[in-house]
Amino acid sequence: MSKHPPQQIDAIVVGAGFAGMYMLHKLRGQGLSVRVIEAGDGVGGTWFWNRYPGARVDIHSMEYAFSFDPALEREWRWSERYAPQAELLAYANHVADRYDLRRDIQFSTRVASAHYDESAARWEVAADTGESWSARWCIMATGCLSTPKDLDFAGMEDFTGTIYKTFAWPHEGVDFTGQRVAVIGTGSSAIQSIPVIAAQAAQLTVYQRTPNYSVPAWNGPISAETQADWDANRATYRATARQQGIAANVDAGEALALETPLAEVTAEFERRWAIGGFTVATGFADTGVDLAANKIAADFVGGKIRGIVSDAATAEKLVPKSYPFATKRLCVDTGYYATFNRPNVALVDLMQTSITALTPAGIATTAGETPFDAIVFATGFDAMTGTLSRIDIRGRGGVPLAEKWAHGPLTYLGLMVAGFPNLFLITGPGSPSVLTNMIMSIEQHVEFIADAIAWLGERQHTTIEASAEAEAGWVAHVAEIADTTLYPLANSWYMGANVPGKPRVFLPYVGGFPAYVEACEDVVARDYAGFVAG
Image (tube, rainbow, N blue to C red):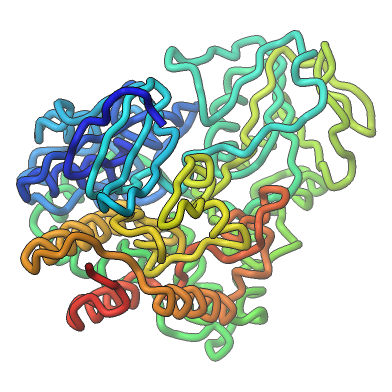
């Protein structure tokens, strides 16, 4: 911990993305002194760090925006259906400026530890700068996809070209004109960046271990008619979204694919494909829980891939076959599959040939060596728990959070952890978070936390924490609901399966946003049942 006397404060918030900014705004409005600690030198979280080519949101822009202030919604205008990173970052800065948030945010500072002092009922938080804070409330707004996987390729220090990482892209951008470029990975970041890089590079080679399902964005400018409709019916659209499983307007169908004539199912998939985005996956209620129904969806999307990619062998490599449709994060793309029709683009299937090392000239596989001028790593994140596990967080009795979570994360509602009083997690494991429109899940969590703090103040309580019994019950419920779906059949980051040695546990709550909100409201109605106030 720091050698300097800690600064006394009511609440410390770790992270200045959308979650941290809204948490600051809410608590400041309740009269609390708040300090936000942010590792980057600006606000925006995900959209501050991820500046790779083609980076954009995969929820409609107008829905991927705060709803807590109608005036804020009215004054901001998005230019595209799916906003690009630069515009999302501009929005984050607008929010920070509009609510004068920067005066309570400390940038370029990384939290190293957070230890609970039982005698004082306060969190002692220390940063890598040597500074420290003593806070009654410690709120982790660290994001679900904010810590990249470790890169463990042999020979990385030998490569004489330039290495880029999608999660830490140069702020000034990169021009690949005339270069031989490799992209390692075919997750969301790669799927967004590959078409843009391919349009610049002399040669692009994509190294794919596991193909991902991707659906078209059909991105474009937001028309005046669409904007006017949103302005006139904003409240209705917001209310409807809150009743959708992913907290966005995706026209979730209730019919069962297995009980609908195949011609009608196909027609419905065609209709949704023409709309694009996550709507493609929400047409039938059984595709996420029944393998036979899922196969209908998988065959449809596989047919689309084969219809787009002209080389049959390449198309087959791009069609996923080892897991059910949409059990890994469904990607939303602009021209991804068509990119493989370009003469300057090649695909290497790492299930057939594996990378052995990076060499001074390029990449060596079991099939030989290929020279490159630049290599782009798009290898994913240690999702949901990665950032928290890298901070030295210790609760009652000095128990490390990493130790408590050694066999998988334990939370109550994804919000609190037994044995860690006054420590809140925003969109933590065990909450819907990454399976939803993150902005709406963030708002719901921030408001729950702010209300809980106000409730404690009204009753003159000092602490709140999850009971061990409530935590165990919620963890069991999260696992039970996940096991009714097809999600556990995929080796996805939802399962922690992309990180060697990470416990294989389904991390988010898959019961849907409305069911989760109902559970939270029931807890509050029963005087925060499952929580222990002291």
